[in-house]
Length: 636
Image (cartoon, rainbow, N blue to C red; front, top):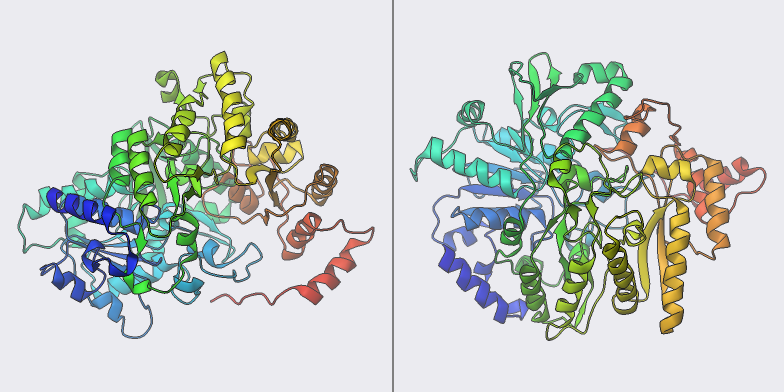
């Protein structure tokens, strides 16, 4: 298998004309493609809500390739038709180990609807941006179909939709608290977070303890549950029919029924969930979901090492959409086809962001060698013109950063390493990132590498750090970033201007944005560069009132900013902001928090991005809404 993958990798590197790529370079998606490989039965079949793009930015491709690398026969069924006779769910038969359901790189509802619950312009992960290629909540829809067709086959959930719905959560589109997605879907297990480690562990456990190398044997759901009762796998969630026996590292949350009757208990739960997600010594979490149903969240794996994350990114991806999409545009792929992800995780801990809940707050960085290998692959793509669109990650400038004293990190419960201030134990040295930028720019075929990810300017302007050398490298980083890696506009995310709103967002004071803009303008003047900063702002965040939006409007106009990158707050599962929005209480202080909850209130706040309402704004807003607003999409 290793020799086969090596040959594929070499062939892919030199054969760059997409229409003539052999179909065998992709994971099989049809019965014919399975038979071409000489396989009689598959070990794992993955159902994906996204189009199949064989690229490390697409979750189904990553899990498929990681399973292939350990010798398993795996296929992907992208965007199956969930209507009619379910032929897409039948065509490959029953796998030996399990069906995997990975509904997409984005939450399906966020991908489909705006904060105003209107249909988005396009589905970024579907061919030609079509909206009819996946259902709402594909995790639930796909799993129910699979359980109907193959009742005894295990179904394993992965991806962000299941990961963030592993316990009681608020669903903005249904406007209610929902139980674990395992309850609604009927699936057997969730692998939450980034799925490589738990998926490999689960497969090896099945092979070693259940199949014993027997090619004809298959795993049943009942066998799998009995096995996991005895050998639990980290970073997974299951429903137990009896209350599990706890220990001193087991945390029992308020039950789902209690959360339904008392939103305060729902808010109290969230703090414990977030602290455990961001801990290096996490415990088990238990929450009762029904009379005889207990969701048990096993503690996550430790953060991936550099060699482990390199292994995932170095798998033999074609970096291209499957040939079935020839002639069609996949918007998300167009955005990332010439970009490189250099790390996972984010220690920013922004209250409205799901990155730390899914990837964790600890930075897992790739080696420079792995990144350069991917850059060289991109330079040989037929349509590459010499410009990398992004060399970044969840945040542009956290590469190779982390705690100096790991013992202090072991006992830390802070959800953010940089809010309310930069942790003194945090290494904010930008030298590894500068070294990486220069190495990438030296690769033959690279004319310029741009930084498209958002930059954390509070790391650049950190002056509390005792390592004074870090301050000097931050200044060098800012200079090089602005002069060599900006395509004309640099993205930053102050999010708001008012301090009390920023504190709830876990963002730095707006005064820091003023300082960074001064630095940016000074560098641009010195080098005679006509560059601009593009700031991102959010309206209707918990704690934000209409008066706060009026202040934001005044301050940004005083700076001469034309607000383009703006959005209305969308409550998504498992964030501090959503918990505050749904419960009316901050989960850490349990103090009341105002939120703009009605569509009219949210539209009213958003209008400040574009014009300042007059003295009697309500009637004007009503007239504008009646005149310009599109009809609200009906819920299905």
